[in-house]
Image 1 (cartoon, rainbow, N blue to C red):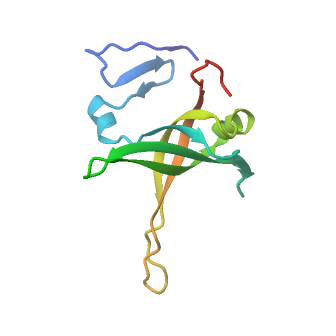
Image 2 (image 1 turned 180 degrees about the horizontal axis):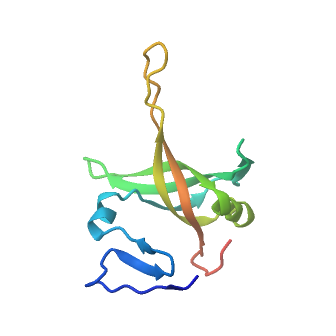
Length: 149
């Protein structure tokens, strides 16, 4: 199949590639901006990742990342706040985490939020809604000395 990546904005603004069989549409700028679900986290890995395989034979990795932030109280004092984030990576990203990420490393995580729960059960009680962070890309970061741990 012949495929070229050409875009002619004035003639074909919605198409990014043309092949012998079909043209692939790309979302317009407005569509992209209306539907963005992105999270970026830079932090330290709190514990070694846990790798598992789901019932559908899909591999995934669980990762705990710690971030710190500092804010000023009304009396002028500063307070440090530590947050622990539970990250889930799937497929190739999970394999990368299993082979390359260890406790103590600093990482940059590009992810999206996923929600589960919040539905009514048989007794009419609403289940708690939970927020999950699904990693799309994880990159180890170098320390100030320049070496990646």
